[in-house]
Image (cartoon, rainbow, N blue to C red; front, side):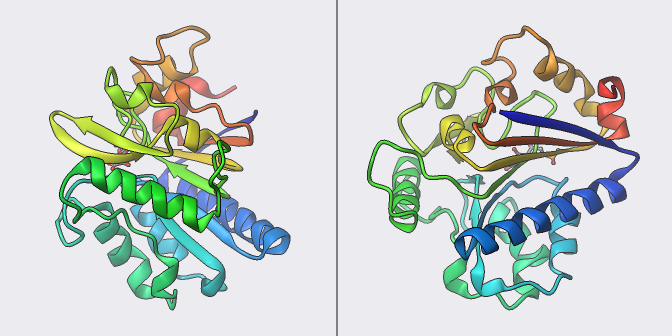
Length: 240
Ligand SMILES: O=C(O)[C@H](O)[C@@H](O)[C@H](O)[C@H](O)COP(=O)(O)O
């Protein structure tokens, strides 16, 4: 694993750096294999990044959008990560509808939604074997409890190693989430973390020893590149 930690002075520069990094990965992916696949996170931190990506002139027909996690709500629900992303980005660019791969949250139950999304991912990546398919980029946030995607502390989702997608749980509310082994199969994993409230969790995630099930972001150890992009408020104590 190739890990890079960058601390940017404030959120606008953090967003600018994240945009630069994602565009670099996008260009490399399209040069090397003709398309770019990215899984997005929800929450508030990435929204300005999505708005910035929407201003770029890109080969949208070669770009495929997935979500690393989603709340088990309809796509028009205010809590939907898909809705936030469409409003901030996807509705503003000429990306083919077929290139947007939302979590099927209208399925009858979260388990079925997770299974269907997994099946879709396997078909898209044409992977039927034991190998986990590799997205070019998985973009992640981190909660102040050190959760990432919808992998929350001390939940059953943290034990799932033989699936691409599972059901997460936040305070009794079901979520659909990539599993940590599937996240770890990505070519690049990029954490985007801002705010002083994330500092204690980051200290535990970066500690030489701490419990992975208490601080789930510790489980993200990709075979490929791991990038931590932090603003100074979050990353103050991690600056080398
Ligand atoms: O569905 C979600 O909410 C996200 O995927 C979640 O994992 C998010 O990234 C963190 O909770 C950080 O959220 P903020 O960026 O709002 O702090």
